[in-house]
Amino acid sequence: MTDELPPNDPLLGVVGALREGTAPRHGLVDRTRRRARRARLRARLSTAAGTLAIALVAVVLLRPREAAAGQITFALNAPASSGVSLVGDFTEWETDRVRLTPAGGDRWEVTLQLPPGRYRFAYVTDGGEWLPDPDAAPVPDDFGRPTSVLTVPTP
Amino acid sequence: MTPTDAALIERIAAGDSAALGMLMDRHAPALMRYATHFLQSADDADEVLQDTFIRAERAIRGGMRPDNPSGWLFRIAVNRCRSRRKRWWRLLGGEAGELVIARAADPPEVEAREWRHEIAVALAHLSTPAREAFLLKHVEGLTYEEMATITGAGVPALKMRVSRACERLRDLLKDVR
Image 1 (cartoon, rainbow over the protein chains, first blue to last red):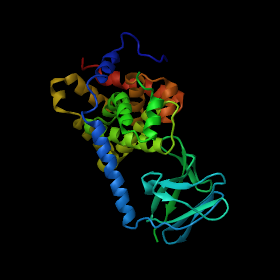
Image 2 (tube, each protein chain N blue to C red; image 1 turned 180 degrees about the vertical axis):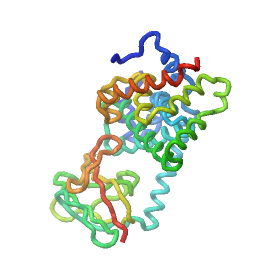
Image 3 (spheres, one colour; image 1 turned 60 degrees about the vertical axis):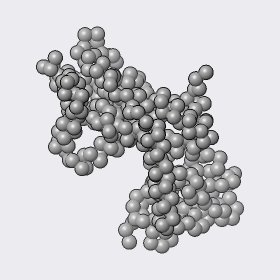
Image 4 (cartoon, rainbow over the protein chains, first blue to last red; image 1 turned 120 degrees about the horizontal axis):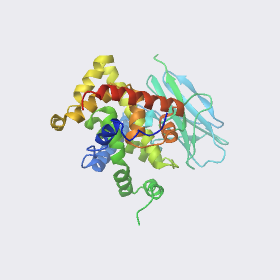
């Protein structure tokens, strides 16, 4: 089995046709910027509506635990970090939406109110390091980084 | 001097939106070609590209520094294409979905270019993994090692998918030209 098509292969004509005529549409950059702005606005409105209710603390990577129906506490032990953010499907993966708060020692924590569903999430230190939760189910994201999965059950 | 991808990524991380535009201008043509042929729709491909670069920008601002920016962008786009296709299948369902997709590949300009139309229909008959592998290998000219990084599949499996895709396409198109 060779890697390339042989010189007389009829598929060479197919490949040639496929390489033509699919240029990006005019204005792609502007449309992408507008769409990104709309996504950010939607996320902010969602936050303002109270979908996310932020609370408290933790250190050593601890498994997110259910405090009440839909209330999840995320906790992380980050000894050398000056700050930690929580990112996930519920933050549109933006790093400036949900900050963990110091909970004593090296521990950082935050509690969110999440609707029932399955969420991917990770912690991001202010040093830019992405950390999964070691006690939650791991799954790689689109970029190959390990993230964690959390399921909030229907009450 | 033309800035490298790595230099553009550092500028994007610092909030330079013009750098994102330059990165898009550089990589969008190949991503658009792949997404258009994989999804059989220029409209959907355009949305996949927007989504790809939005995610890339977020990741870069979150600290991501890919070793191979081109391969990394392809990986995002390939995943976005897969997700979009799964949504089609849920909406349309099974073989009926395949046929609708094939018919949807009839943009007006193709009426005058029957050959392109036949190719689109033939591609629509390939399985998703086979179409993905064929396009990445023979249209985008990637190595099997690059494809393995992008798709998560092993090199032997990819070689087999490409081989099977070629056989199928030759068979489907043998009476067309």
